[in-house]
Image (cartoon, rainbow, N blue to C red; front, side, top):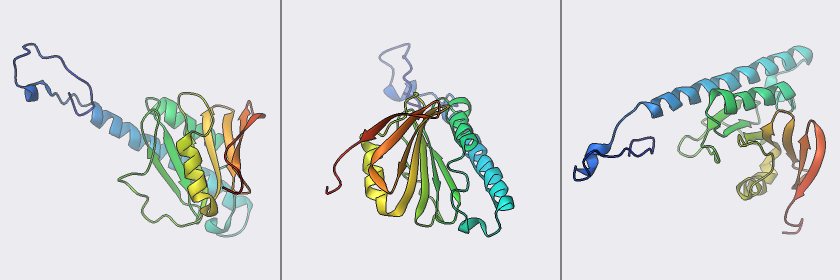
Length: 195
Protein backbone atom coordinates (compact mmCIF):
# COMPACT_ATOMS: atom_id res chain seq x y z
CA UNK A 1 0.00 0.00 0.00
CA UNK A 2 1.30 3.51 -0.76
CA UNK A 3 1.29 6.39 1.73
CA UNK A 4 -1.97 7.53 0.17
CA UNK A 5 -3.62 4.29 1.24
CA UNK A 6 -3.97 2.75 -2.23
CA UNK A 7 -2.99 -0.87 -2.74
CA UNK A 8 -0.80 -2.02 -5.59
CA UNK A 9 -0.88 -5.62 -6.73
CA UNK A 10 2.39 -7.46 -6.66
CA UNK A 11 3.42 -9.18 -9.85
CA UNK A 12 4.75 -12.06 -7.81
CA UNK A 13 2.66 -12.81 -4.70
CA UNK A 14 5.74 -14.36 -3.06
CA UNK A 15 7.64 -11.04 -3.13
CA UNK A 16 8.34 -9.38 0.19
CA UNK A 17 5.33 -7.27 1.29
CA UNK A 18 7.51 -4.16 1.63
CA UNK A 19 8.32 -4.31 -2.07
CA UNK A 20 4.79 -3.36 -3.11
CA UNK A 21 4.89 0.17 -1.67
CA UNK A 22 5.14 2.97 -4.18
CA UNK A 23 5.39 6.68 -3.58
CA UNK A 24 3.26 7.89 -6.45
CA UNK A 25 3.36 11.55 -5.37
CA UNK A 26 -0.37 11.68 -4.65
CA UNK A 27 0.08 12.75 -1.03
CA UNK A 28 2.33 15.64 -2.05
CA UNK A 29 -0.18 16.64 -4.73
CA UNK A 30 -3.09 16.68 -2.25
CA UNK A 31 -0.95 18.59 0.29
CA UNK A 32 -0.30 21.27 -2.34
CA UNK A 33 -4.06 21.46 -3.04
CA UNK A 34 -4.74 21.78 0.70
CA UNK A 35 -2.35 24.73 0.94
CA UNK A 36 -3.91 26.33 -2.14
CA UNK A 37 -7.43 25.91 -0.69
CA UNK A 38 -6.39 27.34 2.68
CA UNK A 39 -4.78 30.38 1.05
CA UNK A 40 -7.79 30.89 -1.22
CA UNK A 41 -10.18 30.95 1.75
CA UNK A 42 -7.93 33.20 3.83
CA UNK A 43 -7.62 35.56 0.87
CA UNK A 44 -11.41 35.69 0.48
CA UNK A 45 -11.82 36.34 4.19
CA UNK A 46 -9.19 39.10 4.16
CA UNK A 47 -10.93 40.80 1.22
CA UNK A 48 -14.31 40.73 3.00
CA UNK A 49 -12.76 41.86 6.29
CA UNK A 50 -11.01 44.75 4.54
CA UNK A 51 -14.30 45.80 2.91
CA UNK A 52 -16.07 45.63 6.29
CA UNK A 53 -13.39 47.79 7.85
CA UNK A 54 -13.83 50.40 5.14
CA UNK A 55 -17.57 50.66 5.76
CA UNK A 56 -17.40 50.79 9.56
CA UNK A 57 -14.84 52.65 11.58
CA UNK A 58 -12.93 50.73 14.21
CA UNK A 59 -10.43 47.93 14.58
CA UNK A 60 -11.06 44.67 12.78
CA UNK A 61 -11.16 42.71 16.03
CA UNK A 62 -14.01 44.92 17.30
CA UNK A 63 -16.29 44.36 14.29
CA UNK A 64 -19.02 41.74 14.46
CA UNK A 65 -20.04 39.43 11.61
CA UNK A 66 -17.10 40.48 9.47
CA UNK A 67 -17.46 37.90 6.72
CA UNK A 68 -18.81 34.66 8.08
CA UNK A 69 -22.45 35.35 7.15
CA UNK A 70 -21.48 36.61 3.71
CA UNK A 71 -22.80 34.51 0.81
CA UNK A 72 -19.78 35.17 -1.39
CA UNK A 73 -17.47 34.05 1.44
CA UNK A 74 -19.50 30.83 1.73
CA UNK A 75 -19.17 30.38 -2.04
CA UNK A 76 -15.38 30.76 -1.73
CA UNK A 77 -15.29 28.08 0.99
CA UNK A 78 -17.49 25.75 -1.09
CA UNK A 79 -15.34 26.35 -4.17
CA UNK A 80 -12.19 25.48 -2.22
CA UNK A 81 -13.83 22.32 -0.83
CA UNK A 82 -15.19 21.02 -4.13
CA UNK A 83 -13.18 22.59 -6.96
CA UNK A 84 -9.67 23.17 -5.60
CA UNK A 85 -9.79 20.07 -3.42
CA UNK A 86 -11.08 16.67 -4.53
CA UNK A 87 -14.32 17.06 -2.49
CA UNK A 88 -12.69 17.23 0.94
CA UNK A 89 -14.25 18.82 4.01
CA UNK A 90 -13.00 22.27 4.94
CA UNK A 91 -13.21 23.85 8.37
CA UNK A 92 -13.00 27.61 8.97
CA UNK A 93 -12.87 29.16 12.43
CA UNK A 94 -13.18 32.91 12.96
CA UNK A 95 -11.80 33.66 16.40
CA UNK A 96 -12.50 36.40 18.94
CA UNK A 97 -10.21 38.85 17.14
CA UNK A 98 -11.65 38.09 13.68
CA UNK A 99 -8.68 36.01 12.61
CA UNK A 100 -9.39 33.25 10.12
CA UNK A 101 -8.08 29.70 10.70
CA UNK A 102 -8.54 27.05 8.01
CA UNK A 103 -7.92 23.31 7.89
CA UNK A 104 -8.92 20.56 5.49
CA UNK A 105 -9.88 16.97 6.14
CA UNK A 106 -11.19 13.91 4.37
CA UNK A 107 -14.35 13.60 2.29
CA UNK A 108 -16.38 13.09 5.46
CA UNK A 109 -14.46 14.51 8.42
CA UNK A 110 -12.33 17.48 9.39
CA UNK A 111 -10.58 18.56 12.60
CA UNK A 112 -7.56 20.54 13.66
CA UNK A 113 -6.07 17.35 15.10
CA UNK A 114 -2.29 17.40 15.17
CA UNK A 115 -2.22 20.93 13.72
CA UNK A 116 -3.99 23.05 16.35
CA UNK A 117 -4.62 26.70 15.45
CA UNK A 118 -1.72 28.61 16.98
CA UNK A 119 -2.75 32.03 18.30
CA UNK A 120 -6.52 31.49 18.17
CA UNK A 121 -8.43 33.50 20.78
CA UNK A 122 -11.76 32.79 22.39
CA UNK A 123 -14.64 33.18 22.05
CA UNK A 124 -15.10 31.65 18.62
CA UNK A 125 -17.19 34.03 16.59
CA UNK A 126 -18.01 31.47 13.92
CA UNK A 127 -17.27 27.86 12.96
CA UNK A 128 -17.94 26.94 9.33
CA UNK A 129 -17.44 23.58 7.70
CA UNK A 130 -18.46 21.92 4.47
CA UNK A 131 -20.19 18.69 3.57
CA UNK A 132 -18.80 18.26 0.05
CA UNK A 133 -21.11 15.31 -0.57
CA UNK A 134 -23.87 17.94 -0.89
CA UNK A 135 -26.05 17.88 2.21
CA UNK A 136 -26.25 20.58 4.87
CA UNK A 137 -27.12 19.14 8.29
CA UNK A 138 -25.36 18.53 11.59
CA UNK A 139 -23.95 15.05 12.03
CA UNK A 140 -23.62 13.56 15.50
CA UNK A 141 -20.03 14.84 15.62
CA UNK A 142 -21.20 18.34 14.62
CA UNK A 143 -23.88 18.34 17.32
CA UNK A 144 -21.29 17.24 19.89
CA UNK A 145 -18.97 20.03 18.71
CA UNK A 146 -21.53 22.84 19.06
CA UNK A 147 -22.77 21.39 22.35
CA UNK A 148 -19.23 21.27 23.76
CA UNK A 149 -18.31 24.76 22.55
CA UNK A 150 -21.75 26.35 23.02
CA UNK A 151 -20.73 28.85 25.70
CA UNK A 152 -17.64 29.88 23.71
CA UNK A 153 -19.05 29.89 20.16
CA UNK A 154 -21.43 32.51 18.77
CA UNK A 155 -22.57 30.80 15.57
CA UNK A 156 -21.85 28.00 13.11
CA UNK A 157 -22.59 27.17 9.49
CA UNK A 158 -22.49 23.89 7.60
CA UNK A 159 -22.35 24.33 3.82
CA UNK A 160 -23.78 21.64 1.55
CA UNK A 161 -23.79 23.54 -1.75
CA UNK A 162 -24.49 26.89 -3.36
CA UNK A 163 -27.47 28.29 -1.45
CA UNK A 164 -27.74 25.16 0.69
CA UNK A 165 -26.49 25.61 4.23
CA UNK A 166 -27.36 25.24 7.88
CA UNK A 167 -27.12 28.01 10.48
CA UNK A 168 -26.72 27.47 14.24
CA UNK A 169 -26.51 30.17 16.89
CA UNK A 170 -25.75 30.21 20.57
CA UNK A 171 -29.21 31.56 21.44
CA UNK A 172 -30.92 28.43 20.03
CA UNK A 173 -28.35 25.77 20.94
CA UNK A 174 -30.40 22.69 20.06
CA UNK A 175 -31.39 23.52 16.53
CA UNK A 176 -29.96 24.06 13.07
CA UNK A 177 -31.91 26.11 10.56
CA UNK A 178 -31.36 24.47 7.16
CA UNK A 179 -31.79 26.57 4.04
CA UNK A 180 -31.95 25.60 0.38
CA UNK A 181 -31.91 28.29 -2.30
CA UNK A 182 -31.57 30.72 0.62
CA UNK A 183 -35.02 29.81 2.00
CA UNK A 184 -35.70 27.82 5.15
CA UNK A 185 -36.21 24.19 4.18
CA UNK A 186 -36.43 22.65 7.65
CA UNK A 187 -35.22 22.88 11.23
CA UNK A 188 -33.02 20.10 12.61
CA UNK A 189 -33.37 19.71 16.39
CA UNK A 190 -31.72 17.53 19.01
CA UNK A 191 -31.68 16.97 22.77
CA UNK A 192 -33.54 19.05 25.27
CA UNK A 193 -32.62 22.35 26.92
CA UNK A 194 -32.17 20.75 30.34
CA UNK A 195 -29.73 18.06 29.11
